Amino acid sequence: MEQKSDTSLADILRAAVFAGRVHATHRRKGMASEPYVNHVLEVAEILATHAAPSQAIIAGLLHDVVEDSDQDPEPTTLEHIAAQFGAAVAGIVAEVSDDKSLPKEVRKALQVRQAPKASEVAKLVKLADKISNLRAITLSPPANWDHARRLEYVGWAGRVAAGLRGVNPALDALFDATYRDAVARLAVET
Ligand code: ZN
Image 1 (cartoon, rainbow, N blue to C red):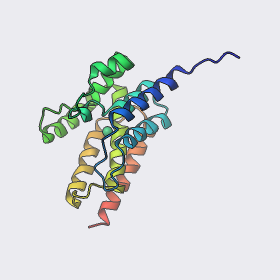
Image 2 (cartoon, rainbow, N blue to C red):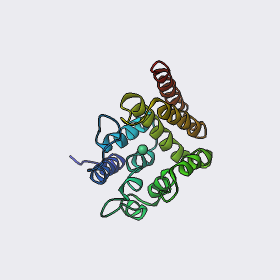
Image 3 (cartoon, rainbow, N blue to C red):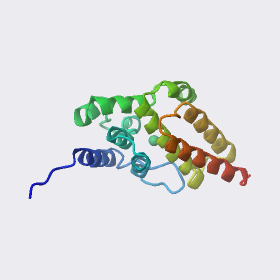
Image 4 (cartoon, rainbow, N blue to C red):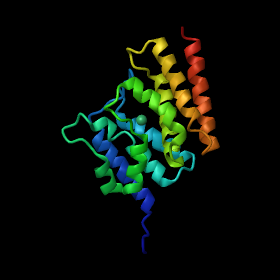
């Protein structure tokens, strides 16, 4: 029997393996110190659940490999991604990556300002990323993040997300529910 391979599924899994290797030594900042790859798998799962195109899912898996490998002996570059996964995926990853040469506060302000100008597929990836990060802040916040800092983060994520809306209503609704949950949990904490 002839087997027809599913190109996009194979590419998605190849991106998952690639991300797993790049993030092999990276951990999330939360108290649970989860392997970093759990975050990008969650982003990809959110995108797949909301019928995002496979390029968005692949970019979701790869969205942090450039930004987070800059301290590695052999940083992963957009050129590596273009060679492995094509220029379109590399373009999406470029759109969702911060310029790490800029101070953190500038990068955060730029995310708010640039969100509305992103391509539709980059908006999906960025919104799924914010959903995953809000969940993490709610469920496993970094030990050194006090209430005020978490509240500030949630508010900032909401301001970025405001510029990402309108591509996928179900994803917008999931962000809203996640945001409300984060705010409600912070409110009862004090
Ligand atoms: Zn991320």
